[in-house]
Image (tube, rainbow, N blue to C red; front, top):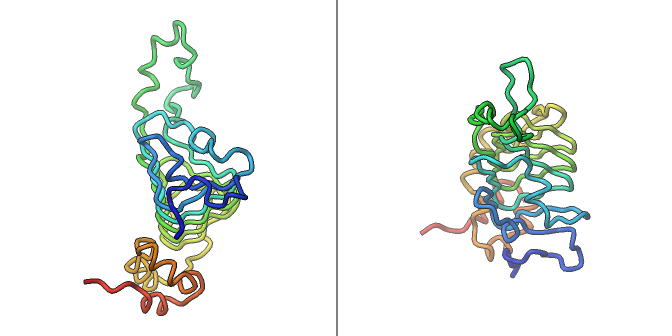
Length: 211
């Protein structure tokens, strides 16, 4: 059985790490089997890929998400004042400027950044603060995601725009109700081919029976 607590699920590929056993910050939550792939020290994910994480906002990533090399999450700590002539954050430089630290505290933010389940992030995608990305979405390489992404939506570009939906609204409702990512791992293993290449009807037929 595949172990979701192992840092390197592919021992011969150290560039791949499971994020749940890696992250230590109480402000980052990652579901089982979500992974990050990077040849340049993927274990530095918290410091190299989650940027400006100074405030209370959380980064939540669901289960079975695939994060390509260079995917980054910009958090609310990157915010600057924009209501005056200058956006420069003088107080962080210290010295006598630090006396005005109140000018950069309590800036408006967009809240937590939340990623659903089974989301595929392409190479060098960037997610801006407070964005919510639905389950089953695909984020194209190089995208800059500034707005929410619907369940099973495909977005791309800078700023990222909705290219198309993978399924109709009715089918998306069925898929979200099935929530295959919450099935027991043994059941997922048994029906792997259906999950990867079957129809939604096949998936419904394979769903575990509820008591």
